[in-house]
Length: 133
Image (cartoon, rainbow, N blue to C red):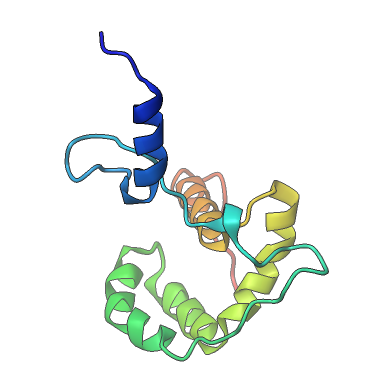
């Protein structure tokens, strides 16, 4: 068994940003989070508000929307939601902020993904119903 020495630790610190979860097909590596732990923005008052520049979002999301909608339990609801959120994504972020504060998380995308995954399973198994509008 080889020892993990001081030089190994220095190399690890130097090369941390180059490491990845998949380690380029060689199995698990380091888990790189989205950066929410180091963000300059915060959920608490007194920290800077984030800049609402979503000019490119619709163009970036457009090519993917159809395939994402096809994978959703209700493609029409997915598309209605996506179209509304693309108009002003900050509305969705503001709606998620209270849950982010309650759960102690800083990544709105991860929060929304977890909610979606759990609700999808819950709906598929009949635990959560769909609702008439």
